[in-house]
Length: 619
Image 1 (tube, one colour):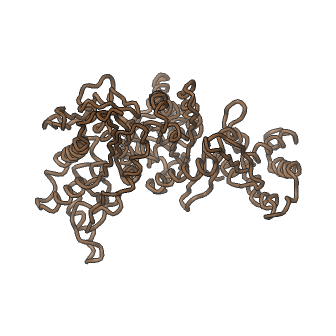
Image 2: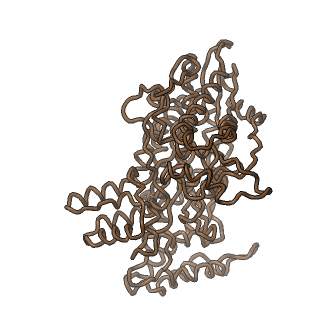
Image 3: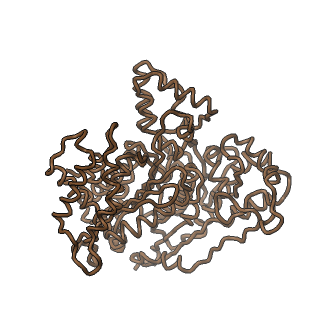
């Protein structure tokens, strides 16, 4: 073995602690972007030491943008994984990589401090001390250097030896990043708790300066403040002050859009699309007048959602003037003063590749995997945009996006297809599992983000045996339902999603809420049909189908539609397949040995159909 050839493994975190702690979708996107950007800095620093990134295949144009040399549009989403492997020479310095990442983060933070805080923060050392302490000790960087090319798990073993611990944080805590002190430096809650006016004395001048970027009574730590504000100042990085990096290169930022759609806006986009496209000119005028009467803000000018962009252009071609409706703050669409309201639910989509680890241990496969993932990552932004979503992150085999309720499942299916196509012909069998969280706009964003990872790992992957889709619905009172299915059982022969086709069958007519009558009794029916443990079911599958088909026909469906008993039985039979959990059992190589549906019916599948049919709005 050539001892001059070494392999450098790098990872940067905490991922969940930095990305998922977010009060706004913009914070969510910012955490992902910054983490990806810092990983790119590490990659570039490796290249400056004549190292070669082996996995994943780096986006050369992204890395050029770090020096202001990129072509076409600059990166606007995170697309560089926080973990990579590189081939380096014997005199490679890992510490130079660590120093580069830490320097980039400090310089970015300082740009934000100078632009937003330096002139308005009271002249007391404590505020800068809090800032410097938090900025300097937040990120955890782990690396390993080995001569063994096949040591794919060496970084995991290194991470088990924890050497990074967050500092103890006194004082009033940040409202976004749990456990971190907010910047005013006021005392801890167990001492005479600071009154609101004491906090406002520090924060109100900052709020006035930042306009809508800091809400009333919102107090942030240094890390959360950088996440909130960095996009406004990113292009200043390296402009007024050179940022000279280890290895003899200069780090530069670029102009970023600050418009990230709120969850309220994403929930409402299809409703807003219909208002803009409406042939009734009064609808546009009425919405604009109502918004003005409510004192609505216009913070969505830079939001780029496909259906709204197209609706705007179509309306203007017809001579209509949608005015400022595109930019309305999403919360105004749910004010009581409006005559009609959209669905209050949006979706978070999280997807991740299956079984790549077993292939990555084979060094002969790594180049093929890297090439396939690059193909997939290139396609993701366009696919998410085509489904009216906002892409937060796409790097390697990971995807994170926020979408309207109506588009999330079809987007997941499209991404699964694109992933399979990217690996086609590679000889590598890898699939893509997904988790969709349908959440009410009043649910805490951080809670939903954290839950999505458990839904993906524990339900779609471990519970269903991978190559699966899992769904949860969150209403203001908590979790309303959970459903999961292997992709092969979730898709019809024509590759459409069965659950969405069923939603179309059960969608309420304008005059008759027939499906409510059917679903009202379905849990009771399932309790009857499910056999007690160790006993046989009272009714066989054919009898169960006939019973529910009769319920369906008796629900009022024939008052608006002519449905035969045979057609009703087919619809109910399809519904029941989606109400039985299917468990896939895999062998040691990840191949399916067998799959079997559960004997018990789970009403959550039926209630998901109901939820999708009425877009979460019960009638």
